[in-house]
Length: 347
Image (cartoon, rainbow, N blue to C red; front, side):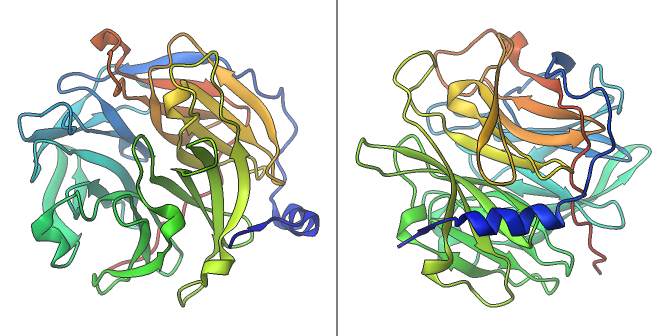
């Protein structure tokens, strides 16, 4: 059983949230950051000092790829990609998604076919590809249908947490690179048109999760959270932070479909609602304070901060597809920088 968040918890959280300098405030204006060339269908986005990296997933169960996906690199100012790394994936029906960075600037990329790939950025692009970690047997043999890594985040100790959509689980990969299931719940299990997706570490040392799950009306779109403890949390530690209503009118689907998460320095949580073509803003107490829509949105998935703006990966991933020109990275002015992501020291 999950427990609704008590009001005093929101008050405690507000104490630890960093303040944001006064400014002009957000405009929520949406602009074009850069196009995503073939194979298109960008899923993840990661701004770093060496540039902005964008991961593609052209392969889907209903759309086979060539077996090669791409990691595009952009200048921090945007525009067309200035470099590309081709990645041979293990299945033509699943590609790349999220990415993270360590203190040395190395990039960790999720191959949803059961691997975390690590790269070293140089002036000439990403080099030294290695498999940092992979899903252990028997799941690797069966493939993504039994265990599919999706989104990831580091903690300060160098542990890498990864959501598993197929198992309804969160894996923990310590610096020794030996993955183990950290948390699993039937309430996180994959269902048609939804499952466990993004995660982020927020104020109060909590791990926040985005998912679509079962409900009385068929589906529920939720943001959940867990205490970020060394040992596995108990099932009763799983809390509902926010529930998005089932919306039969006005969107591409009636399911908002929260996908990826990014915390602002204010403690506000920014959530891509991929299947609704929207971006949601939640305050530190879990109340929705803004819902952003734009004609340019075409199933935005990955979201990360760049300065006082958010970058969104416009995936165009659900048929019937928009024109390929909609597959781009968008920029949304939110008037604040992001909460710093952990970048641990690793061997």
